[in-house]
Length: 120
Image 1: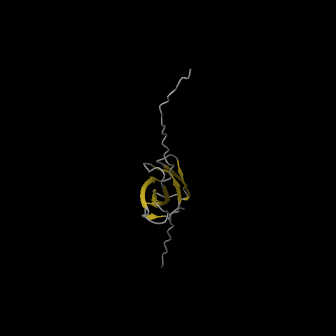
Image 2 (image 1 turned 90 degrees about the vertical axis):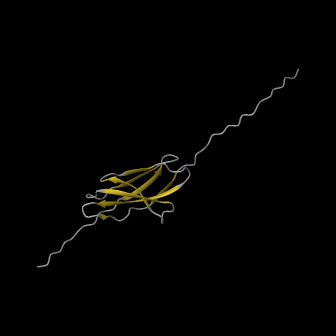
């Protein structure tokens, strides 16, 4: 007798969206398509294709992540994948999306002395 064991993969998150919400923070959101993930792993890259680094994890069923303490005026790219702890399996990656933190505008005023001359 032959037994066949079929395992289903972890379904990846979709529609990842990165939005700069301040000069130092980018918020991420996505749709959770998996019903059996243990967590989501978030990765960041400076160019969107190489140098990916895991920057955080969130619990199962989470659909947001905030990346803070960023440098003003920089672009960051993100991707996420689901992880199922029961068998140590990862999903494929989500789409890649990027955002640029706004440049800090420094309000500088120059105050010059004003000299008035009275004419008779």
